[in-house]
Amino acid sequence: MFLFIKKLKDRYISAKGNFGAYNFKKLLLLGGAFLFIIATYSVIRPLKTSVFLGLVGKDYQPYTKIITIFILIPILFIYSKLVDKLKRHQVVYYFLTFYVVTIIITALVLMHPTIGLSNTATSPYRIFGWIFYVLIDLYSPLAVGTFWAFANSISDTEDAKNSYGKIVAVSRIGGIISPLLSWFLLEKINMTYTKSIPIILIVSAILLLFACLCIMKLKKSIPGYLLHGYEAVYQAEKQKEKEKKVSMIEGLKLMVTQPYVLGMFSLVYLYEAINVILDYQMQVQMSIETNNAIVGMSSFMFLYTASFNGLSLIFSAFGTSALLKKMGVFFCLFVMPISTILMMFGLLTRPNLSTVVVIMVILRALHYGFNAPVREILYIPTSKDIKFKSKAWIESFGRTGSKVAGSMVNVFYSGTAYLILTRINALLIIGLSTIWTIITLFIGKKYDKIIKENKTIGEE
Image 1 (cartoon, rainbow, N blue to C red):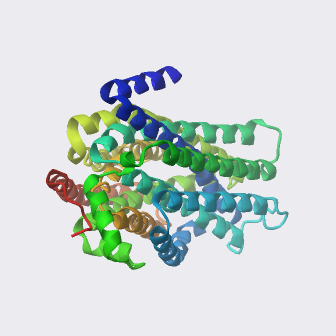
Image 2 (spheres, rainbow, N blue to C red):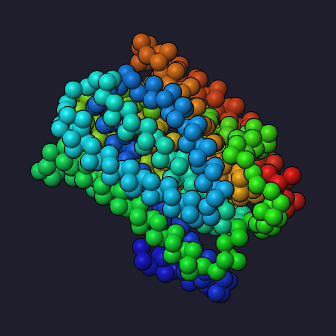
Image 3 (tube, rainbow, N blue to C red):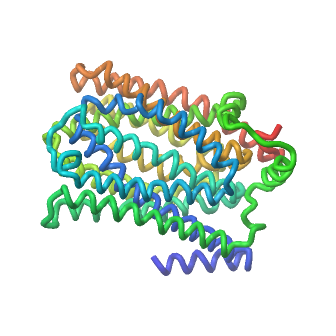
């Protein structure tokens, strides 16, 4: 590992001298910060599912998405205000610190004898189960999304092609180690889960502090002129600061009025809708197989998370940067929807739980290791308001709105026989993926045109 890092550093320096050395340091610190963010996410996300199913019950999971929609609206207005008042790196600090405090508090509550894990009764009236699920569900748009908004704002397109795959690859190491260690603590250490799960949560919260330290070190050690990002956006933002203040709904307005941004919303929406349909199908079967036991479900989810992160590491380390440099962003955008269609034809031929699990591992690995970093590059030629505010609306409402739609599909077909349900879902997903492919064609062409003309989206 250290030999690989040394070779990578030498290659950066030999190519561009001191400029290359600074770029390597930026890559290393961004990768380190994202490693800790994903290490935390790879623990809290599995626990979000198992704790909710254990406290509240599997039949109520689809309704969490509807609740999240209503909570998101005031949160996003607060987020927009913070983006106006704070510098880019300070927005990252704010949300990472928020989750440090939030996760520690939830860990302490889970240790309570009646509110927490010691109470084994499953009921929709276990209010904390709902709160825990919604808080962790918002981690992706607020913590992960804000990190990428910051990374996009300090990177140009060539920098992104060279580094985003590597940043994701580094982060997957955390995504493999943290769930495996959590699984080991749950299964192999002589400790009750009522103690081990809160300990896992507290450690995961502490990891986020290291992510903050990486961003802090980056800001102090990298010269400011190397953090301008896409130069056309930087110059437009400097001019905009002199001219006017923007409103709190600017992000939503840009998302609705800019076809390019609305297209990016569609990319997120369609992937998440597909994901939630298959994910819920897998989780219901997991709940049945483990008798809804929190330990059994948590262990399964930790191993599942480590599996797709391991495969994601391979995709991001050996495929993402290489394909981006060789084929370009336009071609790479089509990999995910076309792969999804092919996998659904496979599910139609073998409609069983094992196939669903294998497809979910591949689908998530391909998304996190390849599709997500490619999609992030689309934000680079956009204004700060789009990078932060519109992105927050896209990541939150795109994800949550699609999950509501996917959950309603799951509720509608909840009484259907498993074999029939699997085939219905496969056909539905093929249809959604076809729409995804058509939208990708528009987005890819628009991105290439903007880059070629050295323009900025959102500053017209």
